[in-house]
Amino acid sequence: MNFIHDPVYVLVILCLVIVLGVYASKNKFGKKFGAALIIILLAAVLANLKLIPSASNSIDLYTIIFKYVAPISIFYLLLNVNLTSIKQAGFPMVGLFLIGSLATTLGILLSWFILSPEKVLGEDGKVIAGMLTGTYTGGSLNFNAVALEYGFQEKGILYAGTIAVDNVVTALWIIATLALPAFINRIWKGTKASKVKTDLLNETRQEATGIDLISLVWLTFLGITAYYVSDILSDFLTQVPSILILSTIGIGLAQTKFVSKLKGSHHLGLYLVYLFCTVIGAYCELNAVSKLKEIGIILFQFTGLAVLLHGLIVILIGGYFYRDWEMISIVSQANIGGAPTAIALAETFDRKELILPSILVGTLGNALGSYLGFFVVYIL
Image (cartoon, rainbow, N blue to C red; front, side, top):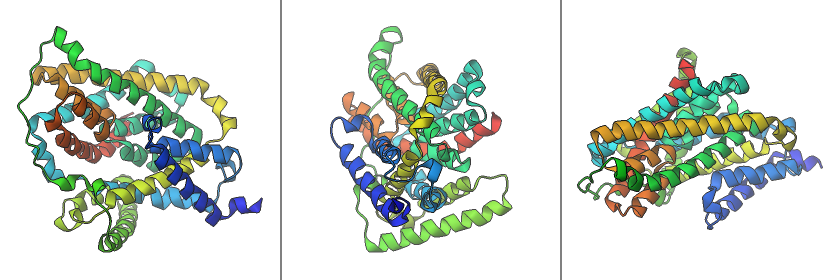
């Protein structure tokens, strides 16, 4: 079965996995898991059935995807970050989100010192702490930014296990934030803010727009060029991770009028992320799963405690300054689950005026997440 190692054959299968994962995530059952995790699981099944190469018999195509495709995908997703539009969310949303980001960092650090996960996870513990800080500030792109810099994505089983734990904790936190306003109001009477303006820029949701040829040629050029420039700069700025340089270039370009008008950067970035996820799945070999038993328990304890501490800090600090418990729940969910789950909460609470601000502060999280993630790795 030599065709198993044919890069064209493997790429066909990886693309098919993405198609199946995206469609599966659209149904009622698949929505609970999300496209990324479904794609990882599908690729893992194929790798363990020896229909595509796995970690033990990796091919150059996987290395190329890790080295080039994944960083450029993060660059494309960051082209949606419009820092000037963040202020339109209003001071309460921005202020609470910054409090939530601080609470995430403190929650991770406190959980680290309470549980000492490094006794089980070893040096990987610091990287995982940074990855979780990133994802619970700005989402999966920050999770992957930290992982890529330390080569953590090559530890397929541990990487996939961390993602699985992240998904479970996020799901539990959705339930918690749904119940939070009614529960907290009984013991700490809250207030409701005046309505926030909703006639904000539609461009903040680039995912709703298609891609045209002009946008495609420019995005391709910018992505490859930005990667090359960040690679060169990293040789001179040896203390600064290359992925952080690339992220900074992306955020900077996103503020320009020309780049902000390019269509489809979100779709392009998301597709490349999914391609990256297929390789993550391929790296998951069942014969290594047994090693995760103790690690899985400490991962869940560490992540769960960190998110719980985040919640307590947000409630105490956010409640002191601003007792709109529904808004605090939505902002906390924007931290932990990202804009999509924050929007779901806003709909549930019938706070439609907070839907677009949730998207805007979500982009602020994209900008902050990697920096806070690397900061946590550094100080630990």
